[in-house]
Length: 290
Image (tube, rainbow, N blue to C red; front, side):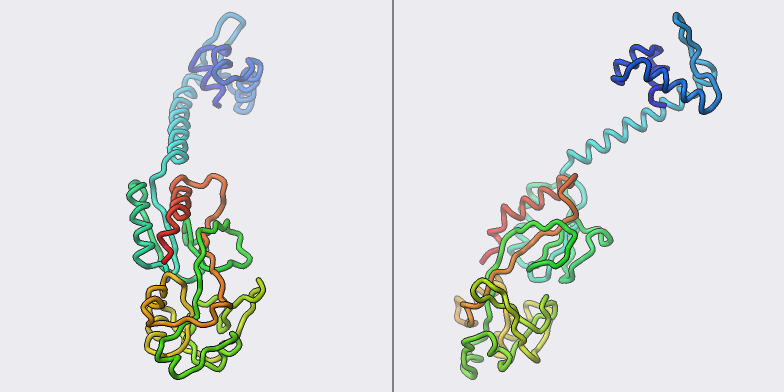
């Protein structure tokens, strides 16, 4: 059909051959096949003359419409591939809903004003396809994922409690002793009622036993500050409280860093707005640190 359009529109097999970069014989075969499929003659031709049949004239009118749609579609796709604007859906864990991450988003919006952000705050690992999420931020290792993971930064972890708590309990010298101490656990903890520690480069889990449970980082800090128990916090949530002496860490030789990873579907043909956001995360990652 495309061969017919160019041959009929230009009135010449030779000129159509140059534009399409196909041989004249190939175009002749295309026209012949099209005529054979529908048992009609589209072009009346001899070695010296060329004219469209009535059917050919009508088909050319339709092909002009088709060619316009093809050109418009090509321009649309080209704009998509070169355009850094459009909607961008991001999913973040609740702990990142803080002023540092807000500042990062503000700087991204200033640099790419054409991007419309949709931000979901949720601690559950999402289905990027069904939830139509472009980038999901995840803390810690992700098991058995088909997504592409790009490490953004890493955070130190602390096991902390208040001074009033330590006035009543002895500092643990080994993580196993946590089972005998009141703890406050994060409901979305990837390891359930077990906390992870590291020894000689190897991660191991410690069962903290029965504990208070909540799904808010603010509440974890509140429970720790009021002396309810020991909890684990990321550095950017508690470093100021530690510096002020309101929280005191323990087991510092056993704790390890936690990765912040960006999950997205694939590296190939990633929209510019997604690539730009990933690059911004890496470039501005120091903003997330204490």
